Image (cartoon, each protein chain N blue to C red):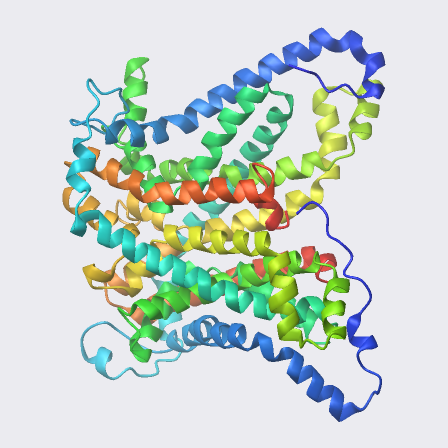
Length: 312
Length: 289
């Protein structure tokens, strides 16, 4: 993965002696043929749900009752209902907090800190801590969620520790549900940022920081004026990736708090699930999903623009 | 520990004592962070061998396999794990075959179609798929695919395809074209060249994509939770959650034991991938950080 070999000269040119337009079209079609299976799969199971999501959000689809039999077009009713419902703006706000604190700040700062400390640390420590951090990330999401649940539970490890040092105990999952799921998400996702930043730091030419050291720049100054500017591309890419991943987090929150108490930790994916499957309002849940898709699409476009040089 | 001995660092050797203290501080902070990561994970391991496990991490009085004995039954563990395997292996197989086929024209021919498609693929990797399980559920009701294992497999495969095509194209780009040209001269078709020349050469890359997709599907809870309804079809991720709901508040030890059994294949596969890729933390490289 370290080196990308040159793919050599463009082979299509040498294989085509004549530039007959119809023949070229036929040739292109023939060459695209192997993409068939992927295109069919993507069209049915990826584009399909996206289109269905837009369509379904304008209907009163439901799990039970009359609307379950005959779904009818209701226009913008789901959306107007959504904005009239106090739970929705609250959920948007919770999602923003969740993404901002756990992904943008938490995972990135902790990931970068870990990556930088590991460059200074002893091999054994690096290997041991690296393994622990990565394990939290590689574990299936539901198992990680159980571990976090046990940690934050009123009878769990955190309270036992706090009690042991004489600090007050709390019922974290009920009194501070957002704090608990945010910390849990940082714990779970820091490994990804750590790996991205470790790779970025490893690619830095060592002479630059050495020159700064010789010039008398202190550690924090070197970080702020040399290291961070040089890995800014990795930082912006990682901001996007962690945001997109955190936007989707469902299982972790569902297991730890189920969005509760009430809707106090219902980010958008949880709210969509609750509305659709607990209250049977599929159209309503679909409208939330559509909004999430649009948010994700915006972030995706920004992300693509940042990666543009790699596609071209 | 051997400090890196670059010739340029020689004149700075006066700074060696300071470097030592930097190392000590780094080690200490890392160990503290590591402990924070260890506590929740340690609970899983210790509770699984503790017959009277609670939610607090604690060293059990006596090591016992009772929790594992209790969950190692067909209904409890083996069938869900088998379902997980069918789901993940099926998904990974379909994804890899479709991705290899799709990556070939993208990697080998310069077409006007390439750029928009690669942009589309990148766009697809960013869509919050798990956030839209409600419309997926509604669509599956319409298509009569609800509670169908193939339906869930195809959906999982389609959602992992964008990332798989992206990775596969990068791996394929690093296989030199000159080797295929020899095959073309001998009269082999593009598909034959792909099968006999390119695929064997990029076996490690294909293995990485396969395992990557497999791990994701194995760990996926939300998709089978919504799309598969009958208990005998549900993978371990869902049955473990059902178990948690039914007995979770009493049998913590069994929950931890089941969780470990379910996590083990993924951990082994991850170690395998890191070996294939040569480094320990190279997964991020595949994501183009």
